[in-house]
Length: 112
Image (cartoon, rainbow, N blue to C red):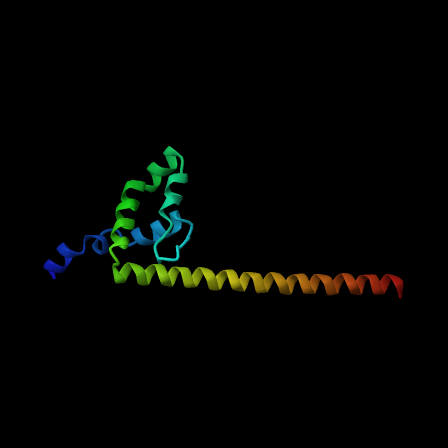
C-alpha cells in the first residue's frame, strides 16, 4: 500500500484536484481527450494565485501521461455536463412551447 501511495501522488493528494482542473478549464475537453489547458492562461494574476494554477498545470501534465483514472474522471464529468446541458435545452424548449401556447391562448381569448 505504501508503494502505491509513492507511485501515485496525484491521486493521494487533495481529492478535488482533477475536479478543480476540470472546472478551471471550463470543462472544455479537446478531441484528444485532454482538458483545454489554454483556459488557465485566461485568469488574472489574483485568480491564478487563488486557483493555484501551477498545481493545476502539474495535474494536467499528469493527465497528459494517459492516466486511466484521471481520464475516467474527466470523461464522467464531461458526460454529466453534456447531459445536464441537454436537459436544460429540452426544458428551455418546453418552456418556450408552453409560452407560445399561452400567448396563442391569450390572443384567442382577446379576439374571441
